[in-house]
Image 1 (cartoon, rainbow, N blue to C red):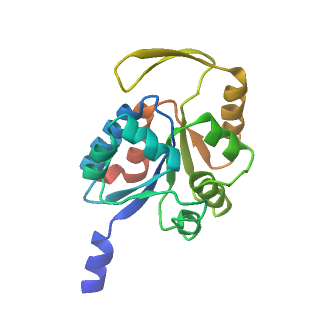
Image 2: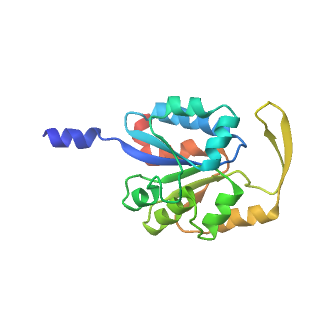
Length: 197
């Protein structure tokens, strides 16, 4: 009886990977903080930072906020440390979310290059039939305006070459591409709908 109670109350886990994309990084963190609050009874979000993400979060002064709101935050040492790829293969996590995902990360996953923590984890997830959700920074071709840490706006061009890699991702089995942070709650509601009741 006690064992059944432990199983019933055991939290399900999600791996959230953050790459070095500064565009909308504050919005991604806000959305994920809200999700963590809404479903904390049932779901634990564990955070995995690329080396570049750690630098970008410090630059945007968001690292402390992230660490204060998520109990487990780990930083990439190499493609297998922490051992996220293995944890994904043994289904320790329900799915892998990479948000934001830089065009570099998107291209590597689209071309099966697993030489970083998050690209390796994504490829190993797919081999083990674990879904991967990716929110690319460069989703649609054209001009975008991004906010810098000092509050100023910078104009950037998303090129067709980056968008072609996103389209390649969209054609991959068990990869789900999200357009921006506002799409992430839908993923959690699909997986953990009962947590919102």
